[in-house]
Length: 432
Image (cartoon, rainbow, N blue to C red; front, side, top):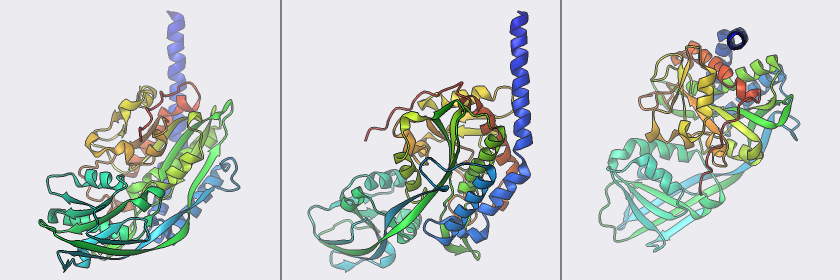
């Protein structure tokens, strides 16, 4: 009994010491400095392919250098460079029953250079009626690889306009998109006897770059733990009360700040058994292309866990000192984190928004698809968040104390995975 009591006392003392390190080494004023910089107006909303995201990348590189991270194996710097083809959409002309549809009621989503349809039998006519879930249907169309003329009910006018604006800024090309040809038409069109569509797009090859650094493992260097967030956002939108910059303070400057802060924390401890990789992904907002590229550079069997951090700027629906984990039931990742937080006021919960399908809507999905226990940690109340993807997502709306407590909780809860003591179970691979 004395030995058991002594062991418990030793564990308690060790936990207390670790918690003290977290509070001393992760400071709120430093968290505020980083997120304020990333969410500042001079970053211009950090849209992919803009000067703003270049500025953000340079800032993150500077933070990594200050922390003492080393580049990923095979890289000479912190940038993980790759290129993708972007299609700049031209004008879409749609005639239905001989009547030209107004330009504000049509848009095309394809990476094909041009479309010319005239009553084409290969084209499927689909009605997106008001009784359907727009997000779910749109996702299905985007993965179909088909030619579709999609008639959108006028009650979806707002989301139609948002998508049209986003598409107008460019589409990233991939092989499936050449076959996939989606033309959206807003309005009620019940009896279609004839239609024709013409469209042209301009292709250009553009650079993209994740920003990644690592701390090599001391005893298990070939086992990797990833901490990630995306540093891109939407850039410049239509002005609202004179403001046109979508700063993306919560989405996802908050997560990127966590990645930078955790990098500095673990470098100061410098006792990680496993290799730690800290990566700020690009192009999440336009299709998770940064994380998809990153996944091709990693051997998934060597990745033990991925802590993807997305929108931790405000208290969760469970209150202060809490966050949720997407895909909680898919592995024991969340259970390990919960165990490591016993004795603290902070708690992790399963994702309370299963209908939102968040597990496959963030950068963790790129590695989860190949079996990695890759989960997203968030506090966002996505069902009622009126600032999401708007110019209102500003630093002034954030709770920096909440961000700081969440980062500290991630540091505490990840410690047995970082040390090699715990290894989460693999996630079932996504069938494609």
